[in-house]
Length: 379
Image (cartoon, rainbow, N blue to C red; front, side, top):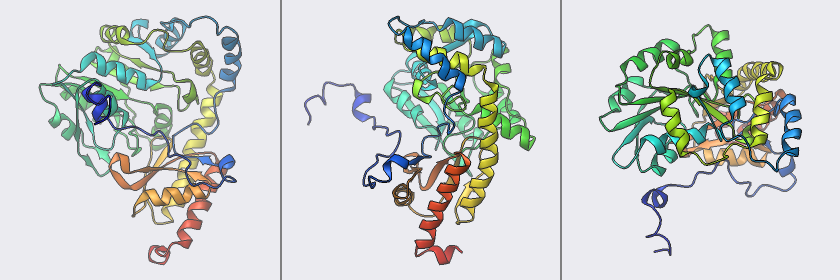
């Protein structure tokens, strides 16, 4: 028994540690400086040039505390989405709002529902609040919305629905989400996590599929929180800033639970500037749509089952334990995410990078494939 085991809370004892990316163990020193990071769904083009420019003045004023309410950014987001300022809450990444929602709505004896193989932070946030996470089964790498509804009981307070989902990259279209929301009981709040919204919207336009207009549901008064982030398409993951749009009353309760000055002035300034840089966003989502096709075809030719994506990554079933494969790729200078922690031990998640990064990824994967004793059987 350790010194503090009996002193810390039950959630702290039972929660597992989340490793955001595999550690660089056993990697030759000459590879480390050129490691291509395709493991964390980061923006390969970095932040908007406008955001970088805006950071300078914010740093120069770093002796002052930031605006605790993020008033300017909230106002801009409210105007853009056609909601009141009170319906917008800015937090330290969208994961910050996930934690606030769980602290606000959950307690021992209450639960939240999501699907298996969904975003791992949901479980961490739920368990930290003392609540229980119920995971409905998937159906062919997609959410089984009927199974999620069946898992709801009188003690459920939250449903987490990432759309597109991380790590499978699959999406629920507008009709499916509309029907789902109409079936959710009144004592449950749905959290529609749209971290990959910009990528999904582009794919939906190209594929002539209707992406859910989640903000309209909020405008009509639904018990719905829509999560968005500046970490992905805007390239500000390192600054930790995201936001939620939902019922003003519920967000006001969440705001009471947040840490003071939790969103830095640098992050606020960068986000304000990034919102106006449509050229940068266009470059990011256009590259993603084109390279998703190229990278997906290349990985499929190696015998991997690649699920069509609606996000900025590919979910690949490699047909064997994925952890050793990910380690071999890392030795070749490319880092991808093995998904054993998501309950998919034979799968990897590959972030869609630039043309050059994706070419290097495919070259490394082909080299490993050709050296594998299973290569002849896959050909």
